[in-house]
Length: 132
Ligand SMILES: [Mg+2]
Image (cartoon, rainbow, N blue to C red; front, top):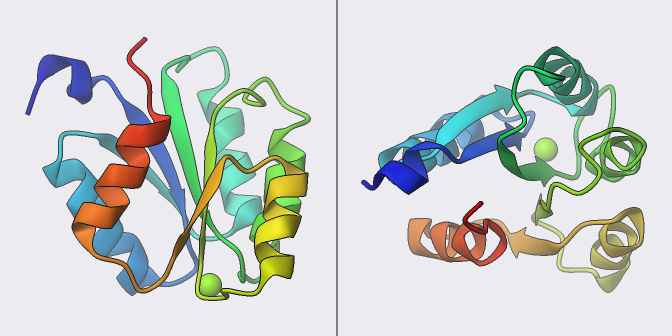
């Protein structure tokens, strides 16, 4: 765990409590600070409460299929906020090109297919989280 890593803050969005806790555990274990949200609407609320308080958000990881607000809609909403330059990784069980393409069009930086290994997740996170 390095000091540089300790400062990196990740917003993780997934409606599955099991996925949320396992991914958060993995990321926190690797030294990242994690904020969890259960759907797109909840995530926007969490982002709003971060405004002007936390400029250090390094990454958003979001599920696609969620109640209240899906991941694709959430991504397009993020692009209308001051967090529009924060990289976004899409977490999906769907390998269909259409879902990946929708994410890309909405502004996602990359995607991860579920189920995944901890190393795959951390590799993808490291790739998009740049030192500030
Ligand atoms: Mg889901």
